[in-house]
Image 1 (cartoon, rainbow, N blue to C red):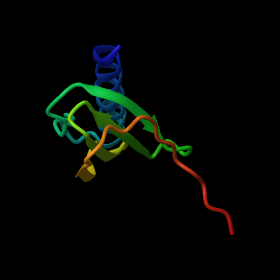
Image 2 (image 1 turned 30 degrees about the horizontal axis):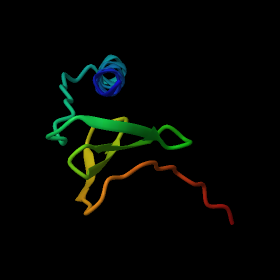
Image 3 (image 1 turned 60 degrees about the vertical axis):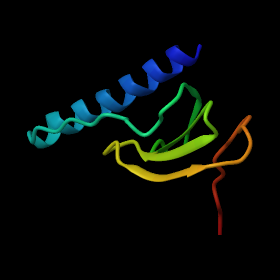
Image 4 (image 1 turned 180 degrees about the vertical axis):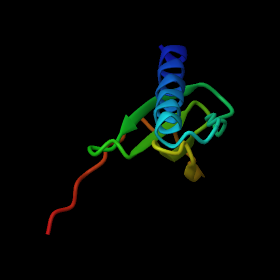
Length: 90
């Protein structure tokens, strides 16, 4: 299942990059390289702009889905079991 999630996440980022490439006609290659161990899970923000991933090594990353850019990376002292995004309202 971990390999499937990593494969799915990689394909989503590459598909997103390909869609952007088709619109801008600028060659770009975006590869998710932030995790050093098996990705445990991934959660997308409600608007689809961000993806939060975590792995077996207690590391979590936040990516911009459109660019594939790593926005934040942290290592925790315990395993992350689940995560979710919330929407703030005024």
